[in-house]
Image 1 (cartoon, rainbow, N blue to C red):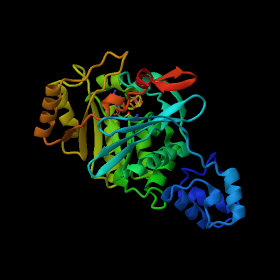
Image 2: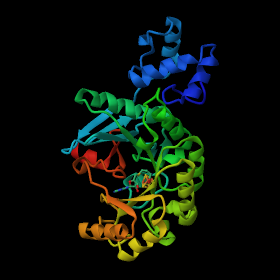
Image 3: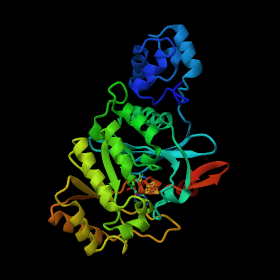
Image 4: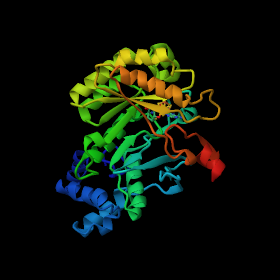
Length: 358
Ligand code: SAH
Ligand code: SF4
């Protein structure tokens, strides 16, 4: 098996190699993908269009298992959250956000995160490990199974759960390939969004292997502040980061790059900072997404008051920068991205908020 413990999450080409290296026809990869992603069937013995001997060998070696659900939460606004056991006493979260005419699934790419943004609960956890493509894709299959009885479907996938996706490049790229493949989840590239804190050289690399929509966590209009809010900025400062974004938009023929900007009271929400952002984004293929901050215990940050957010947005709109304020969802179950902080409960790592309310 090519560097992977599971056939789940492997791009079509790698899966074809797996079969041919075992003397099987390459088209078996397509058959397997249809079973896994179109029918949601993970038991090889039930894949009836394959010879019994092949089904038995897949059953022994393909590693087609989904992580168990540790906890399910449902918010008053319909947002759903699942905590999945990824072994070793660790859990990751997957969140489904229903909206009229669409449903977005927010997947995790790592257990914890090493970037260590001081306002983010995942960052406070530190980094444990990368998720495999199988574990990333499995999140979508678990959610789909859970949502099916309610007639809800996943129309969009966003890499905005725990972790920095570009720090786990290979596995995230594999998973994205399955999301886009018509034999996989068959989503159009505009419906799969990767959010990064800005590992600049990997943005160019991403354009070479995938054409997913790109979102970049900006959070500050200058290097001095961004060095504090997104410590990775010391290594990958704003100027080259933005250049890489414009290159990405060109190379992938994307209409725009989304910039995320979490609104922190008195820190990055001042009129001068809005004006500085205009200078960075005006006339560029850019869309700005203002995110009301979800306070994280133990950090000194608070969310900007609504009038400050509205003023900030208006300054950008007046200057012709496409800007929207993200609606907060699932507040009551603490689903907002970055709200996870693992603590150990009976040997199981569980986010703080969930422990308190479980
Ligand atoms: N690591 C990636 C993707 C996951 S976080 C990244 O940073 O882009 C998704 C978004 O949620 C990021 O823009 C992140 O900065 C933001 N975020 C983190 N903690 C938050 C919080 N407590 N409230 C609101 N947004 C938060
Ligand atoms: Fe990591 Fe993103 Fe949180 Fe920063 S905001 S610590 S990059 S998950």
